[in-house]
Image (cartoon, rainbow over all chains, first blue to last red; front, side, top):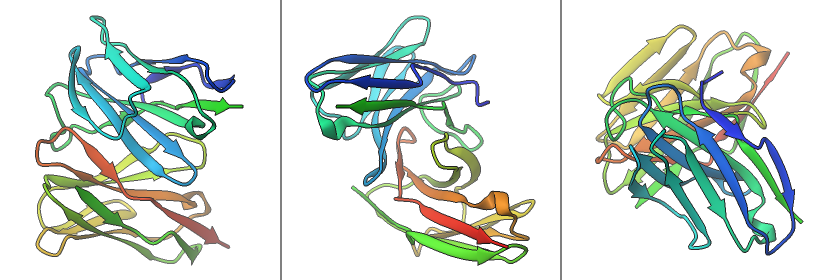
Length: 117
Length: 110
């Protein structure tokens, strides 16, 4: 158990709908990251937040948005869902400091399986 | 941008040694991570290299050559439970983003 908690674990929804994925980082971690993993794409970095502020952006679609709240939990909002958005969405967290430091490993949650039908 | 290459699949025998290579071309580089991921599960941290050379951790070792843009993960005394995907990830020079390679699926056979 990495200490990163994600809900829901599984979600099935229809095209055009909107979903919210939730993540609670490890206790004390200030940075939260979101990754998407689909069968043909591998792990794709979406976005990073540090202590409530966006710090880095990867290949995140405009239909997707995220935020980190004062209690440090984060939500990833996916809207106007398409079949191709079906994937495993991982949240990860790391410790104090805005980025990775030697030994400042990023720890992954168990992921949220999203199926768009 | 980042370009990271790993073999897609490898097969090895229980008890043997296997080396998984990773080459990268990046616009910025701070360090390199290796993660293990069993199917449908979360990636778990194996190693981090920031300096050239070999880092050894039990049965697993990781090597980095910054000048060559090359790393490898060495797994010794393979066990069946080592069957998993191994992900190489490059840390950018701002230290705030990991870019993952496609992963190498390792199958360990008896």
